[in-house]
Length: 285
Image 1: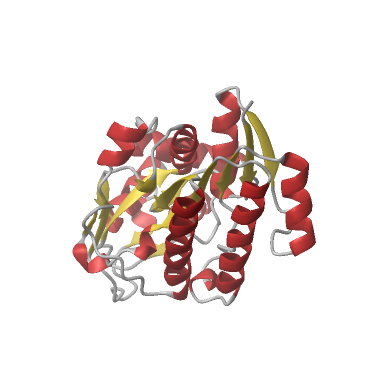
Image 2: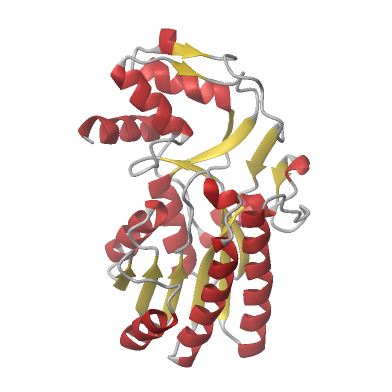
């Protein structure tokens, strides 16, 4: 019997990961915002009631933009470690958690799990990287199967309204201008349903260690913005370069060979079909 506990199950990624796992016919126990994993008693009660064989740990405070510097990152490291300890004590055999591309040294451009240096530049990135190191050592010591899914840049249904793709869609639908940077920086964007599906596939696989969760199809931010606007007939509302260029890495893209060949995951959405889906969701919302 496989019993899966998904934390953060009502979040942006968690909603889609939970749906993907249930579509596979698996027994899924979804823990959302009603379960305060930072509370020791609530955390223990949840794990005891589920006694999971598998855990997909996605819960974290990712309220933009504060999460990059929030002290709550430290609390989530501690809570995540305790969650893993409790899960193992109640029979957990496989533990998969969400990492972030912010763990990488972005000056490398292309981020590969095996060769790219890990040099996070934010408290959020450091917290995630530290948790990965600790969980990996814990899993080795106690023979728990462990994988770490590093998420890149996502968009789609349920995205925070202030995020890039959501902002362009909302402004375009409202007939409002969108002022942007020149958008020359290149990033790897993935539809959130594909990110959730990839995490579900990773959990069900036997793959261990870090795995990039991304599309493997980098695009310039400015081009992405115009692709969104064009689908809504709103290119004239986009003012590329109205804001100064950010001081950040010019290129952040993901190597996805492990995801494709070892996990066996291929994205369902192309960029165009994914943007159409996001636009349809915002129209309905």
